[in-house]
Length: 162
Image (cartoon, rainbow, N blue to C red; front, side, top):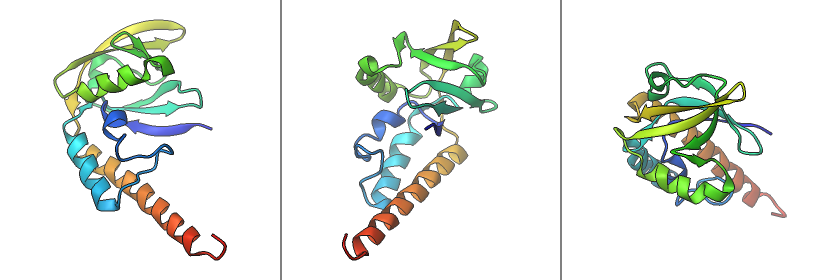
């Protein structure tokens, strides 16, 4: 099973930990979740790529947002993200990468190691603030998922035998 997401900011994984339970679903009420995401994400570093993440955690760049730090740094669709600031994306480095993402703010430089056609290349990106339209779209998509999840839970609890 493949997951598709927009990597709108570096701090998303860490900033969201308090809001999302182990299943990746937000455990707060809708307004709390909305407020938390808006506050945390508006000050987070943004690179501007759409990724495909497979079951094993391999991240492939599907799309690079025009004018984004990723485009300016030379990232291209078809690149595979291998490492961030020299730390490979794997379970061993997960906590350290999450900490690095949480500390990444607009104006900071981040070096990604990307693989393309079997060769690794380093690309240095200067993070930007997330554009308001991207922030609004991402939060809106999350809120739709949150509302859908909450309605499914309420329906299951209301059904006899639940």
